[in-house]
Length: 151
Ligand code: SME
Image (cartoon, rainbow, N blue to C red; front, side, top):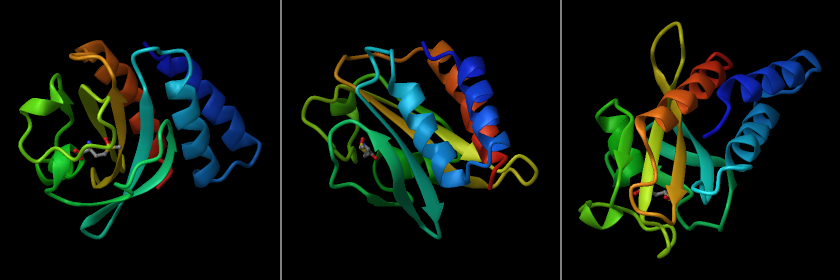
């Protein structure tokens, strides 16, 4: 499990030292991926109009660096305005495969705190089936909420 409190404290320190949003997002994905075996690919997509654009990631390179809202797990999360936990990606019709090794996926939306507007998402892939629990989402939500305050 990620330790959201520790990661947010680290991000706050970096912010105090003058880190910009791009650096905060880069460090956030590194910290979230580090030390959790179940997390094989961790990325942040930002919403640009009706497209999600990959900002930062740790893991294998992906061809899905731009995803339309409504497409795939990532685009569906935005279209339906909800976090999505997919225990078995083979069961999803419009799943976009980044890697044949991926078995499960979790998307946690990043929202601007004042307006509630969706600004992006944290996307995590696992090579294990059913890798994510509600506790993962809760920790990641803390990080997503902090990041959302910087848009
Ligand atoms: N699987 C995602 C695409 C992004 S990759 O997992 C990095 C989807 O179906 O939207």
